[in-house]
Amino acid sequence: MKTLKIIIERSANMFGAYAENVEGIYGGGDTVADAKQSILDAIEIMKKEFTSENIPTMLKGEYEIKYFFDVESLLNYYKGIFTNAALEKITGINQRQLQHYSSGLKKPRKPQLKKIEEGLHLLASELQAVELV
Image (cartoon, rainbow, N blue to C red; front, side):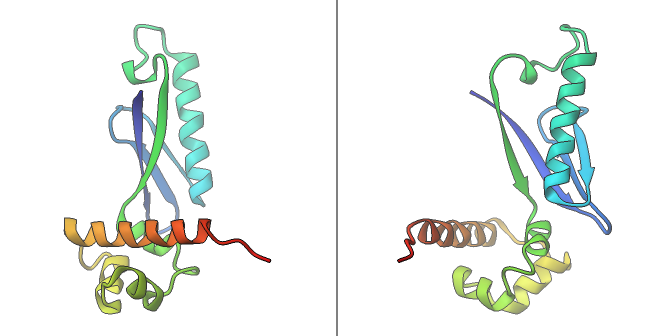
């Protein structure tokens, strides 16, 4: 199945979103949910307003939408949920380095991106296994 890759980024006053692999699909809003809805609205407008010849090939037939964050936006979006101390514990990356990533002062290299992603996925799978009594 085709995958429409949507990148979500945080700016100074909003969240922006765009399709990485289809030109002309943009959205934005005050929250991530608003940005995602804006993207869905943009896709619907494209499907309704464009002729069948002008609709991007990706939007013809079946496709799935996957959302991706850049590290700075992700860390800022979840700042109220994950402290740098908590992120250090689950990723093994020191708090100062995480602060540099969340402020945009530094960009993580691929191995650091992988550590952050794997740490978050491990936490998510552990939380999914929790059953309360």
